[in-house]
Structure formats: C-alpha cells, structure tokens
Length: 189
Image 1: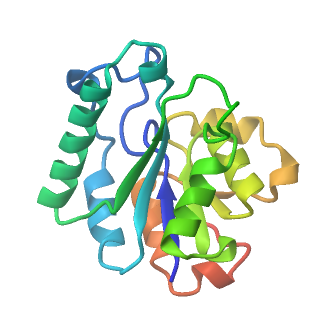
Image 2 (image 1 turned 135 degrees about the vertical axis):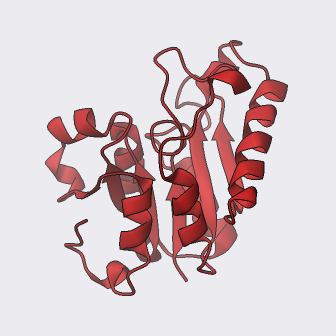
C-alpha cells in the first residue's frame, strides 16, 4: 500500500514570501481540492509534511497554525477528499531533532507509523528541501512546477536522480493513480 506525502506551501497553497502567517493569507492553489478528491479514492494514507519555522520564530502562534490546518482539512473534506495526518516541524534549524526538511525525520516518522516501506512512498514537493528529504529517506519524489518548483528544477542536484515532474498537485495525483507508477522508475507527467 503506497504512502503519499505532500509538502504544504507551494504544493497545496500559495507560498508567500513572508510565509503564511494567518488564515487570511492561506489560499489554495488551483485544482488542489480536485487532487485531494482523486487521491482519496484510494486507500493510501495521505500525509502532509510541512516545515513551519514561522511558528518557531514567533511570527505565528501554535493556535494560529491549528486554525489554518483545521480550515485546510475542513475544505478538503467538503470537496470530497481526506487528509490522514499533518506532520509539522516548527524548528528553525535541523538540529537537534532532525525533523526539519531537508532532514528526513518527518518522512521516516510517517513511513514507520503507516508501515509503508520507502519504495512504496512518494513525496510531492516544490522546493529543493522536499526533494533532498525524499532522497535522504530513499523515497520517490515528484516535483511540481508550482511554488518554488521551477527554481528547484533549474538548480536540480543530479544525485537526486532524474526528476519526475508534474505541472501541479492535480497532475501528480493523476500520475499517482496510474497503477504502474510505483513500478515505473522513469514515470513522467
């Protein structure tokens, strides 16, 4: 059973230069709710993996972050989708916990909790830190062109392998729903 890991800012919602510091600043990217509906037709766990140093820096309260995530979950469910869990790292540095991407901590936590091996796990992200975390956790990765995606692709680190690139989360969901995706190492959207 595959495990789907999704970055938040730049994949699900608009990535703000000053970070998403309030519910009012949270804006879904186009076709995201359709993507969640499509992914939710599977029995695969869907877990959001997000760095939120904005909380660690004191620019957003834990309560404010919970409000954003409650809204996110409510809208996804109202659109016919689901989110099984949101893993958050509020650390401003990788050490001492090793959870902040590009460290693989949160990805490894999700794989252990859901009992899914790395070769059946995929991380969908837009930023280099998402792809590096996937590489370090030995999972598959999909780069979306939304958010920081174009920047990530232009500075691609070839030790991460050949990129699987999709226009957005909806295109990634279409690719993931193809029964052979996890067997096709050269999958492309």
